[in-house]
Amino acid sequence: MTHDASSGDPLSGFDLVAAGPQRSREGPETAARHHDVPPGNPTVTALRKQFPDAVFHNLICAGDEDVVYVDPGRITEILGWLHREADQHYDHLADVTAVDYGGGKPLEVVYQLWSIPHRAALRVKCELPLDALEIETATGIWAGANWLEREVYDLFGIHFTGHPDPRRILMPENYAEGHPLRKDFPLRGRFSRAEQTRRALTQNPEDYYAAGEIAGRVPQTVEVDGGDATGEEGGGDVL
Image 1: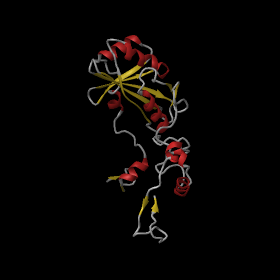
Image 2: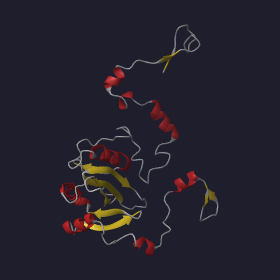
Image 3: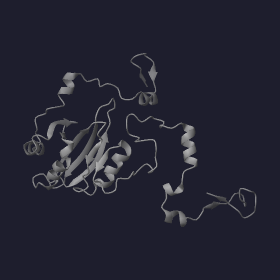
Image 4: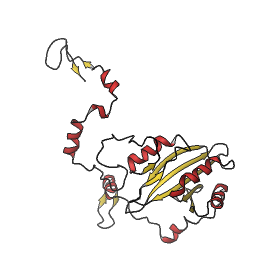
């Protein structure tokens, strides 16, 4: 339980979520220390040398995690270099995700990279304005980017150009409420509870099952006191 700074009234956990993100308590002096960090990681030094115009700035997060902000227009060139260069050899793409800070700020696409041979980690970020949520796919570098990028598209609405299978992966293809992890997405969804219930009751099973699964499905029955729901002997409820 906490308090509303404007009224002094306590806010529940749900109220805090509904209120959305609050302004950071960090002052400008504190925020400035997170940027323009002198590169100590050899990969960051090499990146700045190889792509002087495409590496915007770097910072250190949580004490020892190197984060590099790069030009989204050159993302596959940079990621490909990190993957191929023998001195870097980031052979494992651990994650692709995104961050929406709300308030009209750009969305960040985040790539978490690991070099297993060099036992090194690097986080690469790109900022995308809200009116240009598009970036080139990394599936040509790491096949594992396929489902990760689909998830980012599904939940944040970021399009990965050149992706071989750009379908939603968590929400159904006909999901009409948008992208649930965007800050402008209402907590209870864009539709009323009545409309959400109506859609749930009228959904097409083919949206959730392959045709073969539906055709081969055998209804499951449960005996109710020796009879079915209508009271007839030997019957059962169909689930």
